[in-house]
Length: 476
Ligand code: NAD
Image 1: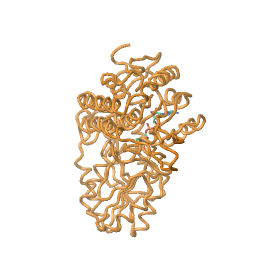
Image 2: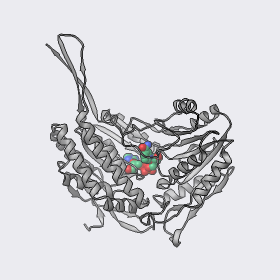
Image 3: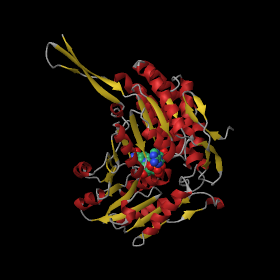
Image 4: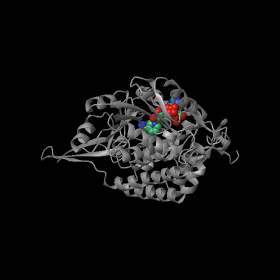
């Protein structure tokens, strides 16, 4: 196969597939190369390799694993330019954001290399004649299926805690963004990780993804993607009684109260939705504006949107394309559905520098959005902010919690009591006060309530997902 084919990386070596599919550059519509379209056979090969590797890996010491994770972090930092360019080409994200994602990926491996050495069991003082202690034991083979929006961050977030705790991994990257995952798996081998500890199988969701979710050799599943597919993954896990972590969509709200620092709120809210062209599960895509600051807030956001540069990810603009033409159609459809609302700015596809094959969409601000409208309830996953006005705190909280999703939220206020009171009432796995961290926070437990999923990734807490407690009772 030629260099332009991205192949799976299994047991320390490249593995081709009989068929391929094209990898499209969303900045131009050009074909970047082909991707091996793996199926059940390659998944089986990867799970078998992971099973074998997990036996030796689980017997290694935390110190040995820590050293190897740290070595991999160093190699990722060394390769920042190469990895960032691959990520930017595959996903369309601006180069500086792709560089940041590379560093965050390295940070996951460094963070878990540090915490694994102080991840302990308990000693339980049950009776003087009994010695009782707990061990956190790895589950075996962890299967991961991830989305295309932050491929390297999602790789670090899933793979690092899984292998730190002594599991081996089989990862299926998103169809659109396979290249950095394969590159990272190769770097892991260079760092000295034993073959088979990290395996990456490329392919399409309903083929390679479904085969991985249904494989009887998987002991844990983690999924990052849509609620619709998450349901299928949870079903497959239930059939074989394996634990699953679901990180699904979001429709997170910014609650901007009348006493907020509006200038700061506008800047942070605008930048958070511009990041990765709004294709962030934790994007704060709904603005709930106190009627007292509504006009100023919208003016400031619109002013920021007016300055945005749009272009191919590798030219490092403020805003790159969406991940695909399909996603562009989807975003356009949502905006067109908002017939009752007022488009303050944007709302159109774009063709920067006359590029007709790209998947660009202008930064869009929509005011007067009915909280029951489709655009206020469903995830758009584009650079689109909807605005709904409120008059009272209770009303703002009800609006914030008024969708099926419950991933994140932000409270903008200078009233300390209100900040804590409202933070406690927002349904979501993370709440920010006078700041916002779309997609950020290696150290911070992250995950949803309701249709945003269950389980927590990131932080020390993620180690618990990849281990099970064994209690040992010894009669003295
Ligand atoms: P998607 O659900 O279509 O795909 C996600 C992954 O699942 C891909 O790897 C895909 O190949 C695979 N897949 C698709 N069909 C499958 C099947 N039948 N069986 C097994 N695997 C299958 O989602 P998407 O459109 O790629 O990603 C966008 C979604 O991901 C958004 O809803 C976004 O909010 C969510 N997301 C959530 C988080 C989070 O942490 N909560 C992070 C990033 C993205």
